[in-house]
Length: 364
Image 1 (cartoon, one colour):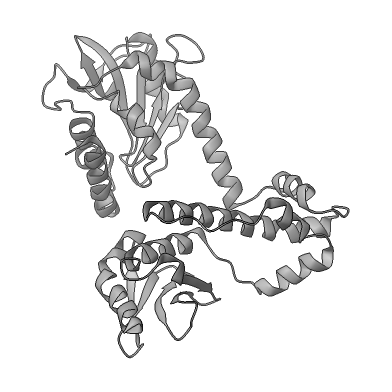
Image 2 (tube, rainbow, N blue to C red; image 1 turned 90 degrees about the vertical axis):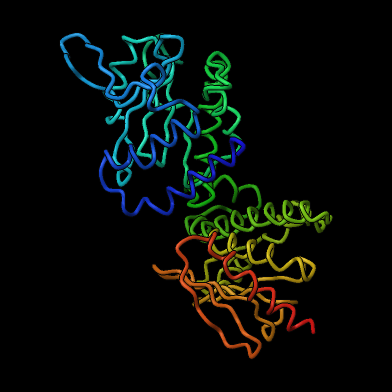
């Protein structure tokens, strides 16, 4: 298998098994050792390549052990410290890594809970591990842009100089992306004020700021949905629909009464990114039978409807995501809905046949 395929295969295994992995030792065996062997390509049973329970005395600290050391040409190149998969990673967990980093030749330190891998180097001071990772790999949501850098740490493609030289840029790009994602999901007061000033001509009172908080969040979700739509259409060989110019959009919001009307029309309905992602999956499934632009969504308080031709008499699916247990509702030839529980969005693909059958029934 190719590198990316092996990465996705391990990610699928982690999703399936993480609920039953509740100790550090189990995390190592189930997730970390396969990562070292199948992803990085090192032989976990060869002590010339992988040293478990690596020991190096550090000052007055004697006999401390690091979980794994990756060795190349007789020198330690990477140190790996593991925590149990059920816990979040914190820099306090890296204390042993921090001490060992200074007394070995390692330039890369990895802190992991089997699902999230944080990669550190010594950008701030030579031979001193940074306090912030330059790369974070989340196996639950793999950022494909990081795969080429991760490949450079594998046994066959090892290029430490290239990784370290790119580390500073990776570090700041990663932090910026995470901050941007946070702003899209939960806009800060400063971000709301900044964007409101770009489109609202009146004085920005506290009342206006409160009103625009929901509008900024809604605009952010719609923008992300538009980006996904364009990528889907590009993949299908279709031209994206022309967009309204930003200046025209800005001109539609010129008074507090317009803002209030928009808020009243939303009637408390909040379309989530997860619902939009589910919609894109359903549309990708049924676009083999109809043009993608004919598949639309309508959000309601109790469910998220996916319709053919924006016709509520032609339901394709309903996403019941406003609850702890998520469901997808599919329809038979008599438009009777059957709900199926979902543990992840990927499980929507298990209902491909019935989704396509619904569309074919309407077309016939």
